[in-house]
Length: 282
Image 1 (cartoon, one colour):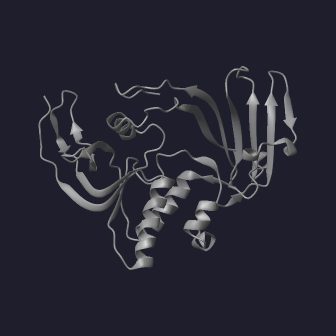
Image 2 (cartoon, rainbow, N blue to C red; image 1 turned 60 degrees about the vertical axis):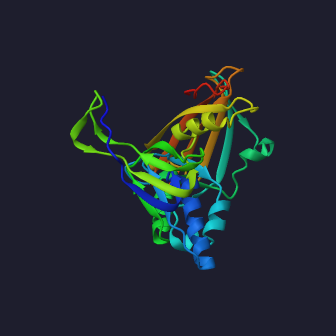
Image 3 (spheres, rainbow, N blue to C red; image 1 turned 180 degrees about the vertical axis):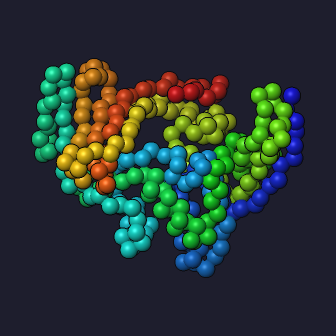
């Protein structure tokens, strides 16, 4: 039987769940507004990863528009956007062949001119440094495990998970209870299918009258290749084989700096809608 222990609580103006690009950008912009207006807001970010950037997709293509708006001087600040896209390829694969799609035939969404190949982990680490310099409190290694509600059913914050729980629910010697973080505003930046987000969807029926969500399941590896096989700034996308004609998906190869190449593939998966009877698992 689980022992009940009273949890300590901390008060903030804003609590943000998740130290990804969205959560960190929100925290940074809030503190920037404080500096611009001479006001003050206490802003806290909780992150389940052991450090900022440790629990996020790595190699990716990044459009810099949001970075330009957040930090117009990001280059001088040393933001890790080091590899501009210089060449793009799109291939349609069959089992024996690869057919090159002319660049002029690319859909607009595939035009990556002016974008950068980045490590999102490094981008998040850099954003975390900028946020802390502006006075944001970041708590890595603390997963938000529960949404807290007031007596009227409004979100009043989150609680982090207890540590040191045995399989039978008893407390081990290193047990530490979670902490409640109360806030006037709570922002959930957990990413796709976050556990707290699913709870909120059920409680407030947020998926009512909505189409079923569609998600892509992917796998990615980061390779270090020989210099003669490395082409910084090259991105390649494929469609077709080994997927059949009814399945959406494809693969990608992104050449970053330092002889690193991000290689991966995705496949579509559609989830049926749920009707308030509990969350669905991908």
